[in-house]
Length: 87
Image (tube, helix red, strand yellow):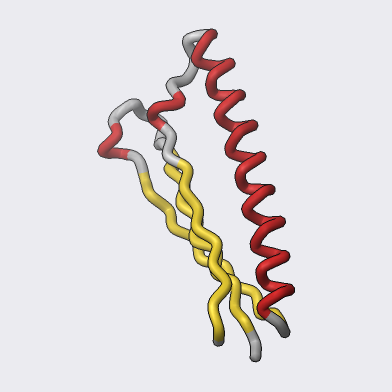
């Protein structure tokens, strides 16, 4: 049985304005086929850990910028969902 791994990631890209109405939500869908569910679950675990680390680094960087008065982390939304599904 082939198993698909779907990654749904969302990022908010602020335009060159502070007006939130000008921000754009950009969904991305990526998939990969695996020969077994075990391989898919291993890849899922690795990807989730990587996304979590990237999010933590981004949050830390934004907090540093906030302390300088250059950014507000509450204006950035980062979300992801990784699933292994039977084909």
